[in-house]
Length: 189
Length: 219
Image (cartoon, rainbow over all chains, first blue to last red):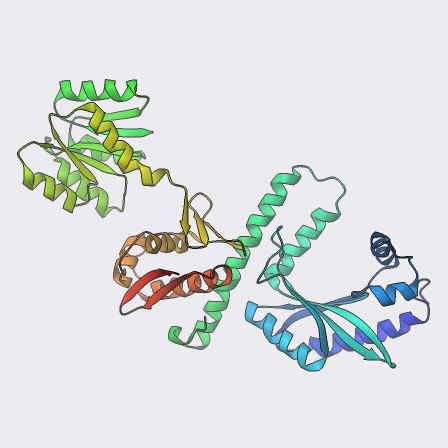
C-alpha cells in the first residue's frame, strides 16, 4: 500500500495498466510508457499552487497524477493517435506544442482525458510525440533537473537549435515516408 | 572586406592596391587571369575587380569560369571606355557591374559598396518569416526550423527571385556537387519546404509545379 495514495493507489495502478495495454497495441505506437506521479512531485506541485497537499486535493486539482506517453515514428502518427484517443475518451484539454512549440524548443502533443472508473472521474495526461522529440525531451529533462549545469546558456541555446533541426528532419522524414507509399504528387501538404 | 584586384597594368594595379588598403580593404592582387584563377581557387573574397584585357587568360574567361563553378562573388569589370561589346559580354556572363577606364576611385568604391550590399544582409525578411543566412533557420512568431543546407539555398533562391524558377535551373544552381540526380529531388525539397513553411507562416507559400517551375507567393 502506498503511503500517500493509500487505497486509491490500486485504482490508479489498474487504470494505468489498462491504458498501457490498450495503447501499446496501436500500430502507430513505437513504444509506450506511463507512471503514477510520485508523492514528492505531487506535494511540490500542490505547494506551488498554494493548495494543501492532501490526497483529496491532489485528485481534485492535478491532471497528471496518471501520465501516459505514447512514442510514434512520424509527426502524422501523433495526430492519428490523437484521433484514436478522442474516439475512446472525452478529451478535456489539448495543448499542441508541435504547432506552437515552447520557447525552449519543446515539441509534443498533450491531451487530458477524462477516464471514468468505479463511478469516479480521473483526469489523465497523455503525451504523444515522435522518437526524436522524445529523445530531445529526455536530454532537456536531464539539464532541467541537474542542480548545477556548467555553460547553461550555451547548452540551452544548443538544445533549442537541435530541437529546431530535429523538427525539420521530422517533417522531411514524414515526407519520405509518404513518398515510399505514394507518388510525390499525392503527398499531402 | 576582402577584395581581389586583377589588372595587368602594373602602375594602375599598384595604385589600386594602395588606395584599397588606404580605405581599409584587405586586398590580393593578380596581374593576369591565370594568377586570378589560382587565387580564387584557394581563397574567398567579398568582391572582385577584374580588368577585361589581361594576358594568358582574359577577365571575361575568368568570370565565366567562376560562375561555372557556382562562385557567386560579386565582380566589377574594368573595360575600355569605347568597348560596349566587352561591357555587354561581361554582364551577360555574370559580372555584376562595370566601370570604364579611366575611372575615379570614389566611384569604384561606391560601386563596390553597392555590389556587396546584398551580401552583407544576413537576415532576409520574407512575408512573416525571417531567413537567417548564418544559422540556416527560418523563423516566425509561431516557430522556428533549422533547415538543411540545400533546403535553405532553395528557399533563398525562391525568395530573391521575382520570376518562376524552373526545376532544371534550381537543380543546376543548388545540386552542383551531385551528378546522378534528377529534377525529382527539387520537387521533394519543395515539398519539405512547403510543409515547414505551412507550420510557421500564414503569409508565405511556395507555388508551382515540377513541370512549370516554382515561385514564392507572399500575401
